[in-house]
Amino acid sequence: MKWFERRKRVEKESKRKEIPDGFWIKCDGCGEILYKKEIMKNLMVCPKCNYHFRIDSSIYESILLDEESFKAEDENLAPSDPLRFRNYPEKVKKAQKKTSLNDAIICGQGKIEGRDIEICIMDFNFIGGSMGSVVGEKVKRAIQRASGLELPLVIVSATGGARMHEGILSLMQMAKTATALNKLNTPFISILTHPTTAGVLASYASLGDVIIAEPGALIGFAGPRVIQQTIKKELPEGFQRSEFMLGHGLVDMVVHRKDLRETVNILLGHLC
Ligand SMILES: [Zn+2]
Image (cartoon, rainbow, N blue to C red):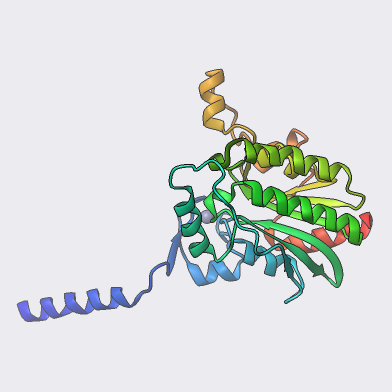
């Protein structure tokens, strides 16, 4: 009997080992344990509670654009370390290895239903999608290209804000991108995903002709914890989430990820 029990346990353990890492995923919205392959088919949205998992720039590229239509620009721009900030070069190297990107954004041209657009997609996996000199410069160049080529511009944001490792040079990108947008002569659709906060929200992300947010995304300048500690008051339910921001006029539409592409296409049809 003891032999039998022991054998059973070993089998169970070996079975567990066959399951690769990341096979299951816990939903941050409802706590349900979900089969990752199923969630991936559902564009990384929980079928139970509609929670939108954070996804990387390459997945947004495939969701939004016609297949293999994306042509990246300025891919080789990579950050330097102007302030000699402690561990910054190591952090950058690690992020580059993890994401196969040179910085936290991809920019270039692509097509939506055959229509040419200029598009930028931020990647939160690269140091929290933070905006340093490279992100700012790439966004500025994308805006200028959109003007020059007379293409509509779409920017997908996913960011904690300016990159502290580049100090004032990061903050300068706010003015630089906002000034460039001021001269843009084509429509600009800004898509806010979870989270879009601080210096990026306070510059190009909130300057879209139409601002779309994914459901449940955190959108704000200072985060809710900082605000609560400052004003010492309980914050309303859903504070700074997409739906709250829609009700308060900062966002024009809240759109489910599966409808993003069609919505952008319809809007461009009206705007272009
Ligand atoms: Zn869920």
